[in-house]
Length: 145
Image (cartoon, rainbow, N blue to C red; front, top):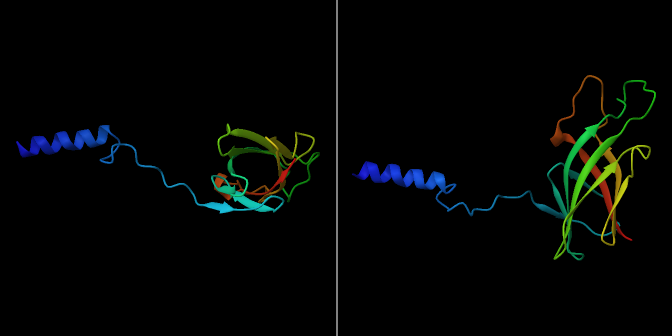
């Protein structure tokens, strides 16, 4: 009888997503505090906050990177495209796309009365190396419009 009760208890916990009832929050990456007009860096998945503005940014992904490898000769510079999520307290979130090449799109995006600008993206591609998502570091700056 006890073993049946134990099995039912375990199945109930699995169904609820753990014994915490499924309401346990994930541990987000720590938020780094930055200020308006201050250059800062983010890795994919990292968050930066501007506490005095009630604004936060997360570098979601680098879904495209066709930049010319630094050890190759290319007819064009190529482009890397970044997706950045912006959220302000009591406002709808937005996702902006930033590009390393002005020929492919804008290096900056607008959210409410803020401008987020891509300063640089590292590392630079090389022919013999694939860049893992977690290796990207974007240098950004947020200004008021």
